Structure formats: C-alpha cells, structure tokens
Image (cartoon, rainbow, N blue to C red; front, side):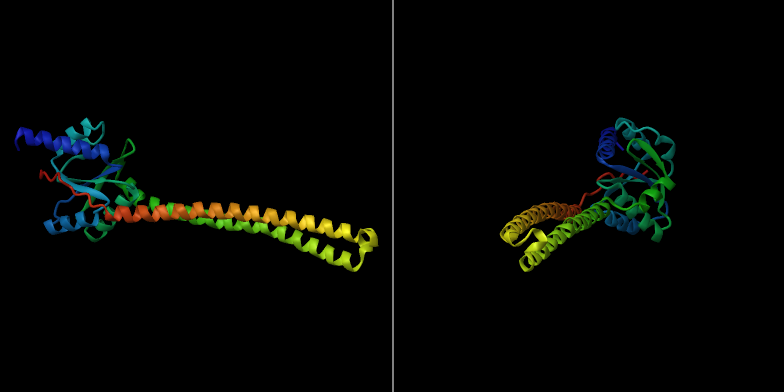
Length: 241
C-alpha cells in the first residue's frame, strides 16, 4: 500500500472512531465473502463494518484520542463502527454471531472506556433506546389516565352529593333551614355545580394537553425508527490485513 493510501486509510478510520457512538472489534477468520456481505447487510442502517489493517487501526485510534486498543488488535480484525444506539448495534452483531460461530466479538470501545467480550454481550441484552422510549411514553399515558381518574372521581362524587342535597331540599326545605330557605338552597346548589363543572373542564384540558404531549413523543419515536431504517451508511474502509 502506497504511503498516501495509508494516510488516507488512517484518516478515514480516525473519523469513523470519532463519529461512532461505539466500536466493536471482531475476528472474522473463516468467514466467507458471502457471510461478510450478509453481516454488512444485517448491520445496514446500524453500523459500518470495516475490515482493517491492525497497524493502521492503532494509529487511527490514537489520532482519535482512544487508548487501550493496541493489545486487542491481533489477528484478522474487522470493526463495527456503530452509528446511533450502541445497544441496537451490539444486538445485531450478537444475533449474527449466533448463526455464524466464526464471527468472534473480541472487544469494543464506548463512552471513553474499553469493553471486553462480556461487556458487549451484556450491552446486547439491554433494551434499545427506542423500546425504552416507547415504554416511557406508554407509562406516561397510563399515569395520566390514572391521574384523570383520580381527579374525576371526587368531582363526580361532589356533583352527585350536591344534586342529592338539592333534590332533598326541594322535597323537604327544613333540612337546610326551613321553607324560606328553598331558593337559597337552590342558588347554593347552582353555585357549587357551576364550580364543579369548571374544575372538571380545567382537569379535562390538562389531561388532554398531557396526552397530546405523550402522543407526540410516541410519534417522534416511531419517526426515528423509520428514519433509522431508511438510512444506509456504507463501509468504505476495506483494507485487508
């Protein structure tokens, strides 16, 4: 490889490290070209899978400010540069390795620290960001429905109590002070009912606003999922070594 080609490869790898949320080092010894192609296809929209020369990768990692990979870069190495959610990338790699035992997940790098093989497997077992957000949106909606019920119950009870009192007062004005108090009772009942109605309207408006916000979150999560599915990043660094 010419010197200029090596420099270009190092620059490209360094940029991959800088722009990735995580990187997973794999050994692909024994995998066929068709299997590697299938692996890249399974990672489409999730990660760039690049077969690299270890010496160039060591230089690129140092240029990207990453330390601790040198001892791990041995044997045939290919790196999955994960774009977006590291959990989703780790899951994709783990799932492919289940059906293709020759793919070995050796180590990785994320959030400033080195990951060993067990760390990557634990990462793959976590729920993805999208799943967690969807669950959060569902939990928020359920909580608001519960809160709406808690608000509405005492208001409905108060309305029923006021109505019962009004009916009793019409039938027997003495229960609130005698016959001369009937009109006063009716006015009091009307005022209370009016207050209850206004409070119910306010609660309904609040619940509707919060439910709208929750629906908006769920919609944005769905959009993010579709957007990610439509993205097709391609690996351009394929330097055998």
